[in-house]
Length: 118
Image (cartoon, rainbow, N blue to C red; front, side):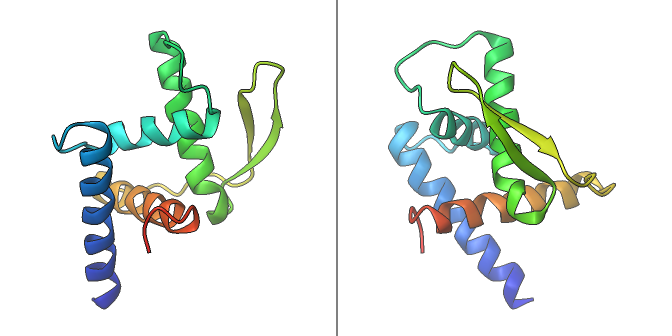
């Protein structure tokens, strides 16, 4: 139970900090945070993206945050700077709520590792 409480507190901290920094305090949802991670990982913050590229950014983020769990591995970065990942292990079949918890945990760990939160 303590782990769940810690995850919830850390998740709320991530949402609060990112919402203040990127959304003038309007609460960001999970998808928006995933998108921001994708932007961060690509590192091309000064350009506009098409709809399909925005989905690719979210894919980059998902792969990045789930890499420490053994699901993905960075294969290469192409000439335009886009990272490409290989699937190492299939994601388990999870219910929607379980998927959300896994992603939140992975995102919290990402921001702990980058030093954004403690």
